[in-house]
Image (cartoon, rainbow, N blue to C red; front, top):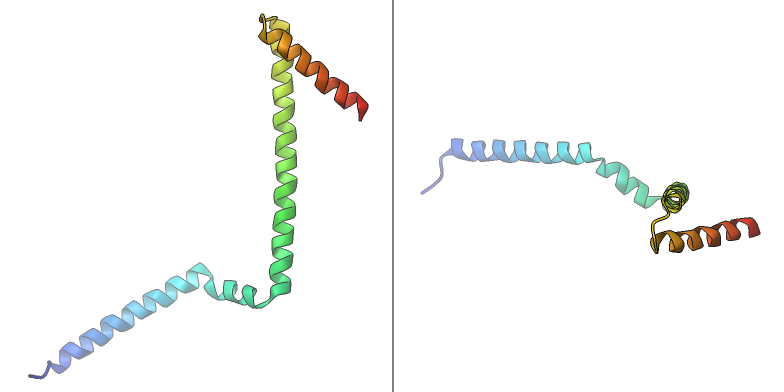
Amino acid sequence: MEKEPGKNEQQLDKFSQKLDEISLSMEKLGIAEYVEMLRNPRRLFFINFWAGLSRGFGMAIGFTILGAIVLYVLQKLIVLNVPLIGDFIADLVNIVQIQLKLR
């Protein structure tokens, strides 16, 4: 009981098509560039260094803006003179302003 010769060719064609699809997908993902980068540790170090530096700089700017917004909202709440909360916020803002003057 041998298989038909045409069936083997069809299976080889399907296999070849799948292999082509996989290689095309890998090419699109840039796996070759990634592997090449891993083979060069100095380049990998510098890429990670600059990525970390830019993330840290972005976080510092983001926290600064967020802190400024929070202080602005706290100062506006003081003007409303909400009982208990207003006194607490006033003390908090005074502490922050004193710390800013000390620097």
